[in-house]
Image 1: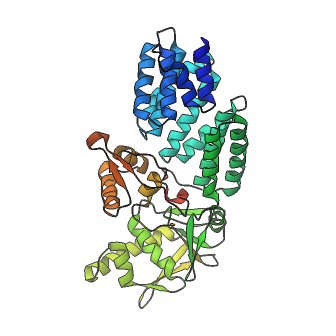
Image 2: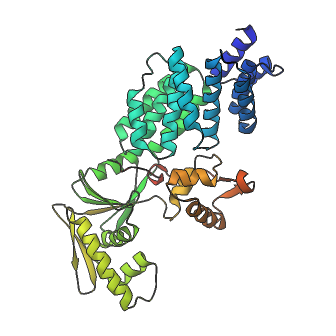
Image 3: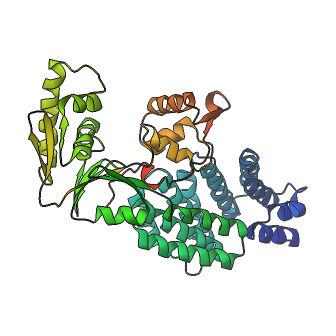
Length: 406
């Protein structure tokens, strides 16, 4: 390896893309193209970065499999930064096979970290946690250890585990300091804000207050019946009733929780659950049917009693009822939470992360654009969506989750 390539690689490892470009900007051999591509990615020009990395991968010969695999890994990282969530999976799997065959442990760790990051972007928290548990970063460079601890931190956040999140953040801060990369240390400090910002609102007994992540964890562990409006569940301790796929039932449960210990009127329940005004006999008949279904779902946790004016929630073996409400009330909160990272997302990537159809994502984006909360860049297949970072609260509980949390 010549001295210019070695020096450029060292500059990129320390977060100095301009220093790397000064050494290889005029060279077109595959190794230099790869380093130029990584430098352009660090500078934010993702399109140019992908072009250079693809040229580099094509330039490596059949005896340079590791060089090509490194290009595939770098291109997968660029794809994730560009929120292309469908593409990197196959490339990373191919790269990992090559690294394993040649004993390249450092780049294998890097590729696995990218796989874990993709799982989290898609809301696959259990898969990400399982891959993290198998990852050994003991001999990895400090920069990769910091990234691994940040991913562990994010998994703990998504699982509402405040103490493990604090421990992972402290480890990430120490590893970032050892790496000497200022941008990485700044990323760790930004991530830590999620622990101190409001993550949800607690509604109980007619009072409303904001909760941090640790306070949300404490509320979920309480002996009360907790109606979680962020994840659409009802729970008491370890017993959980999942209603995320039963939106009408949860739309009935929430006003019952808000009204506790009183009753929710039939008209109010119809308006909230069926999104209609001026209830008629047909609506009231449907309310009875849906309330029966909700009563069956909640049987392990609570009963629902019909009253003269409506219905009342009666928790079983619980002291009271607490409602955890999202920090913002919007039917498109999950889209806003995904866009809050400041990256430009395509409609297809949003649909993939939401676990919804592209048409559903398009409707949410149209509503948010009309409200001035998001903006589009480009047209057609190259169109991307941006939103200003959401200030004042953490988006942890608004992010979509492909599996139930516990």
